[in-house]
Length: 296
Image (cartoon, rainbow, N blue to C red):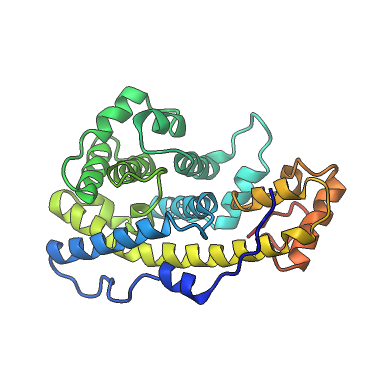
């Protein structure tokens, strides 16, 4: 692939920025917060279809954030770096442990659409027919539908909030006709929110969206800037297999050098990553001298 020169302009950043009036503030009625969440979702749809945003990479970052929030809500706070390590360095056939499985579940979810068949691949411990039944619980507007799915699943499996939230995100994404599941509710819902039901749960779901979308928009704008810079420096990379390696950085949240299979040797992969860091195109994410991970 040949990358065309691309400059990230302030105009693009303005497009990706959520209007300041879309803020939870002191909203007191469900009608008010529903209006704001509708505006936030409309803006988010624009972000999720903007050509400057590396969409798979954005979803990967949101999956990491969703896993962090879910673990914190379960009383097991973990840093994003620990979650990355748990998945990146696990040997084939080994388990990454509970926190790694949580992160993997979100990774699998955002790689797919919100259909029952796709979610069964993301949630291998749940049967497709069961998933279809949960997803069909919700009726009405997208957020109400998602809240109903979360409530029904939590009522049946109160000790498995992560699956309830993944199904709720699937229901929301499907209702909005997004091509992939995108974590939104999960980023803004707190532990106490998951004990609510009915209108109270719908209220906090609307509020969670209004709280999460500004963060998602900022992340999207940052990734768009970084992706534009990587594409600008890509022609300077002379290593054979460089284009395929660059594509991986535009797709995955974090990569060990060994994942850059298009490059000939581990030594070449390390040199390639160090060259990208030198050019300011990627970051070393761990701060370690060994077992390093790199990403935009």
